[in-house]
Image (cartoon, rainbow, N blue to C red; front, side):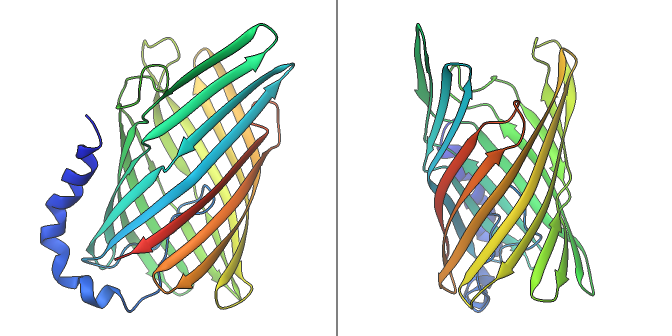
Length: 264
């Protein structure tokens, strides 16, 4: 499996949905970035959308050892299948993981895994909207940067339109490989995300994120406080950036990123 997988998967469905591309240009772009929450919106039927990190850098420091992970150009390619569903493929062409400290200086680099997701709006009534997002991870990462196993899960973002803001809850359940490779276990993610436009182009976002990994060897829970901003350059072009801060010792200390999204 390589980067051709992403383009082949979306090229297949684009032939079905292409006829709606022109009308898609009328709606402003809506993305699953920034922050870790998923949006309940989908790409309009027949439209293509690219959502990409420029650089995503994470640091975790334990004692005198620093672990830095840098991902370059992690890109999600989406195509609208219907008015309320889309298909998404994500791939990172370059990841570097480096660990440095007393007597330690290790580096791994290469490509990342491929993630395939299907998103569908399953409920929209009044101020509430719910989407369903099943996903699967295809193990394409270079040695040492992934676990070489297929994993998957499902997310259920629930969004409420408030006066001048949008509140989103995003529970997600994952089926993950045990650390000893002998079986599978659950992981559970939850986010509380509040997004508020401050101008017609600029939106500020705050989020609380938690993830619990129920590995039989050891249950680990992570927490972070995440902040981001998104700027609408044109109705179909968005720039964004953010910072995530770990709130316990199991969570990376800081994560910084910038990105861009464009609909075609």
